Length: 267
Image (cartoon, rainbow, N blue to C red; front, side, top):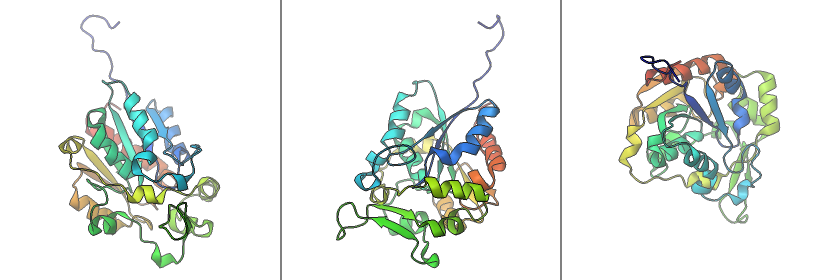
């Protein structure tokens, strides 16, 4: 109990980190270590068929199903707690989905080289801005056909021989090796179904976008187009490949802390 007249110290923010397609909570191991060593609270979520979740990506067919672990996490938060929700790559769609459903529990949404579309994939422009176009690299995907070979693919993962060149070309060799061992096929069909209905509450959550200037997946021009269409509160930039949690973790950590401070969290 604080002495009379003294104000109890504010809690440091609680960061919740969401990976992109094919990844898992393991992607954030450097950032989690930096945060926890600095006294921040941090949670890393494995979406369905990702990380240590045992589901098969070819059986995850809807965006709701894919995001069930994040929705359960958000539902379990105390009513008076707000988190800083951070999404990487396709994890930006999951962050936006969470802001539609749990706006009162999110103090800030941060998009790291992430798909930032207010309503998801409703139009050709959404696909152009938010979906990676890797055709310049050739036939880069291993696809799964859980509904049959005559049906659209249900899962995808970048072939091992292309992963470093496309996603980790500025990252330490040991990190891209780790990724090659842990990446799993992601539920492609589920992500293609990411469409949200209009909800005014989503704009109540301040947003920050962190650009990755050497990105070969979500290219800088795509990032700029999404920023222009749905203007965030602030924009930062990193000289990084698509995976700044590997290639530039200290600066990424600093930007996340700076973003938290910008909306009133103590650091």
